[in-house]
Length: 219
Image (tube, rainbow, N blue to C red; front, side, top):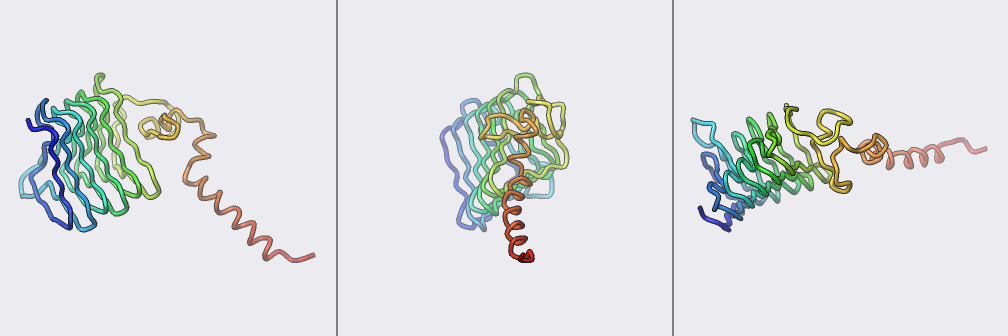
C-alpha cells in the first residue's frame, strides 16, 4: 500500500527478481522504478519456474516504469494498468531495450489513460500485444517516436477498440503525437508525407540530382 516511492537501478547493476508488482493496491499510487545506464540489467524472470507476472499499475494508479540510458529489462509478460489508470511505461534512449517474452497487456482489463512510450531510439519486444480489450478501457495509448525507436510485435489482437479504419492493421492503434490522432485517422497524403520512406527520399533526391548535374555531359 506504499505510495510515492522511487526505486533506482543504475550504475551497471544487475538485478534479478521473480516478476514485479508496482501499485499492488488502490493506495499504492505515484511509485516509480527507474532502470538506467548502458550496463544496467533487470532480469524479472529469474528462476526455473514461472511465468512471473510483471504489473505496472495493478490496482494502484499513477505508477511508472522508466528504462533509459541503454538499460535492459526482461519480463515474462508486462501488464500496464490492469485495474488502474494513468500509469506509464517509458522506454527511451539508444540501447534501451524492454523485452517481454510472452506479451504486453495495456489496459486489457479495465484500466484507462495508461500509456507506453518508446522514444529516442529505444526498442520494445513482445510476442503479443493486448490493447484496451474491455469497454471500460479508454484513453490508453502506445506511442513510438524518434529515429530508431521500435515496437517489435509478432501478433497484435484486433479485438481491441481501435481509432480509425484506414491503412494497415496496426494503423488504428498507433498515435501520431504531432497530429493528435492515430495513423488510422490520417489521410494517405499525410501518411505518405510523414513516412520514413518519404523522409528518406526527400534527402536522397537532391543528392541524386546533384550527381546527375555533376556527371552530365556538358553541351
